[in-house]
Amino acid sequence: MNETNRVYLYDTTLRDGAQTSGVDFSVADKLAIARELDALGIDYVEGGWPGANPTDDAFFAEKPSLRQARFTAFGMTRRAGRSAANDPGLAALLDSNAPAICIVGKSWDFHVDVALGIGREENLETIRDSVAHLKSRGREVLFDAEHFFDGYKANPDYARACARAAFGAGARWVVLCDTNGGTLPHEIGRIVAEMAHEIPGTSLGIHCHNDTENAVANSLAAVQAGARMVQGTLNGLGERCGNANLVSLLPTLVLKLGYDTGVGRDGLKRLVHVSRLLDERLNRAPNRHAPYVGEAAFAHKGGLHVSAVEKDPASYEHIDPALVGNRRAILVSDQAGRSNILARLREVGVDLDAADKRVASLVETVKRREYEGYAYDGAEASFELLARRALGDVPDFFRLVSFRVLDERRWNARGELVTLSEATVKVDVPGGLPGQPIMTVAEGNGPVNALDQALRKALAAVYPDLEGMKLVDYKVRILTPNDGTKAVTRVMIESQDRAGRRWSTVGVSANVIDASFNALYDAITYCLHTAGAGTRGAASVA
View 1 (spheres, rainbow, N blue to C red):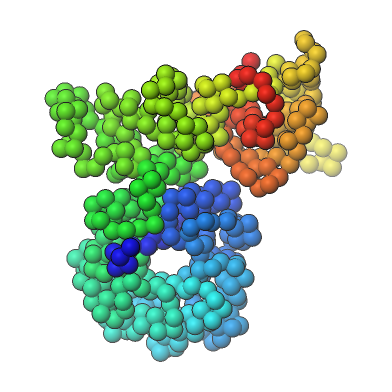
View 2 (cartoon, rainbow, N blue to C red):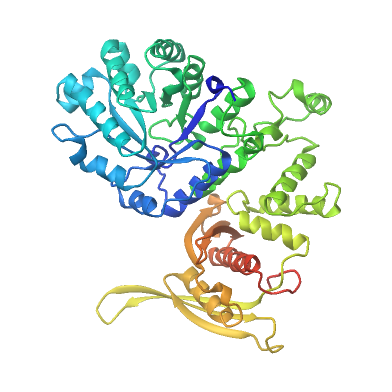
């Protein structure tokens, strides 16, 4: 590989993206997203800011095991008046045990004078000391030069001095930040090209915000001017107007400009899946018109246009949609759907011939269920079960006869207002007496937890594999908000077994408890199936 043609991708969804209004990642969300980014082929996954909040602290304590991406902690340069060795912020970064550390520092003389209130030379010393200290502890160091382009336009000599201070102290990457998103592509290109004379392009990065709708264009301009790292977020998440959208940048860099990245052609085909998985994690509808990955990105309206597309799609589409995991929304979309289904089946170890009649049936089933509200991009376990049921590969571990959930809100003996949930379930279990279902009752912290407890209480004696399984995340999304309290809801449940393996399942119903049970049923079935329990035929819910 030609290193000068290699562009490194740095994802900051879990920190910068978390600053988006209305976005609140749980630890489970962060773990799932980090694993997807790693599987995609992203080079750096920034986990957050250790010590900044309890969620980031818990995430770093349970940090994911990544195969390709370098897990990165974010922080800031040492405080003025402290040595790097005695700075609590740098200590927290080192204690995170992240192999790479990105620190942000001032590069605009105005901010040094007014915000920090220290001498400009002292600011250079904080940059040098911080980078050198972290590097001496064996970490790969990245320096985010905050408001670099504003600083460069105001005082280019000082902005360059800040960048040189970091690079000279051992920073692997010096990242030039358009922090307020106000710089335009022609300015970015000129300034990055000038900086490439100061610092090798193979150590220059770009970090753009989207306040003028130019974050992607600015990032591309920087790469073409010599920068070889791009920082951004999935779906362009970020404060104010967002960050550079890696979902748009990645295929443009690879397919349009011919750059090499850590994401191979197979990884590109996961792009739609990863983009939509993020939206499902955030309980929000995907942008149908998003470039490359939106449902309408390759949709062609009826008439002569569609006929022409069918005859010569290349002349009407800027890329083959299958390259990024998308599909053309015309009559032949069934074939694209078929290829997507086959690819996802291969990911779970099921290799079917494209001509197998069961594939066509499965494609139609997926389409119908997604029309009903099911979303399988964020619920891979439910998709695998759906596919294996169609192939007759899932045993009938148990059959629900009935369930009932009661909630009681009352004052307890200590004068506290409490809400108690109680669930009663009846299930038929293989090997049990015919016509005599097992009935159990359990209390829980909410109706779903009560249902979970009651179900596993009924199944525990027959299926010891359920021991140690727990629910780690639960999300509800209203699919038909105009229907008020009659709205259809989608429930996503994430579960974990005692080995730490996680999986997600989905349920849909106009009744939120029923939707929750459907997702819970899949979660338990998936646990038993992957554990190899049982040998009976296809599963069903009464």
